[in-house]
Image (cartoon, rainbow, N blue to C red; front, side, top):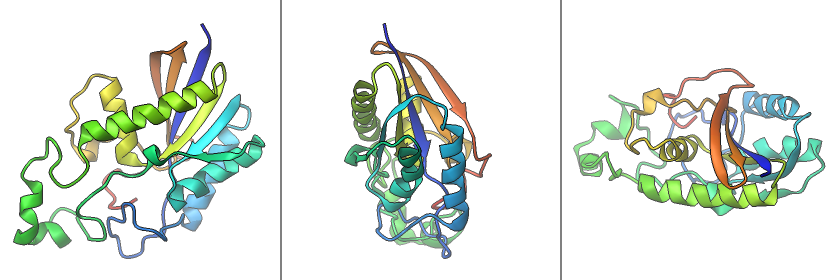
Length: 209
C-alpha cells in the first residue's frame, strides 16, 4: 500500500488590532509576523514530497499556502470545506469576562456547549474537513499534501479521528499558529497523527488568532 501524508496547516498570525472574533469576515490578512511564519513553514516543507496544496478560501489561509505552492511549483487549489467554522459571535469580542459574553442578550447562544449552540455543529465541521482531507489524500496519493485551514476545524477533525468527544476546552487545543497536524495514511487507512510547530508555539486562547 502507498504511504500518503496530509498536512493540516493552521494559517499564520492575522492583523487584528481590535481583537475581535473575525471568523469568516472578509479582509483579514496575515500580519507581518504571520507572513514570516508562512515562509518558515514553506522552508520547513521545502524538502518534502509535496504534490498537492489546497487552502480555505479565506485570505489568511490563501496567503499562508502560497509560499508552499510556489516553492514546489504547484498550483494552489481551494476547497470551501477547509473554511473557518461559522460562529454567531463573529465580529465581536468574546474573551471570557470581556465583550459579548458579559451581555445577557448573548447568553442564550451559550446554552449547549456540546453542540455548540453558538455556531456550526462540531460533527458537521469534522465531516466536511474529513471530506477535504480525503480529496487531498487522493490527489497526492503516494506523496504528501498540504491543506491550509483554521484552528477549530483542524482541532475538531483531530479529535474526531482520535475517537474523542467533540466538546472540549479551547484553552487546551494543540494547534498553534502555523502548526502542522500531519495525518499519515497507509493506503486509505489512517495510521498515525503527528503534530509539529515549525514556527514555534503560540497561545491558543488568543481571540481570533
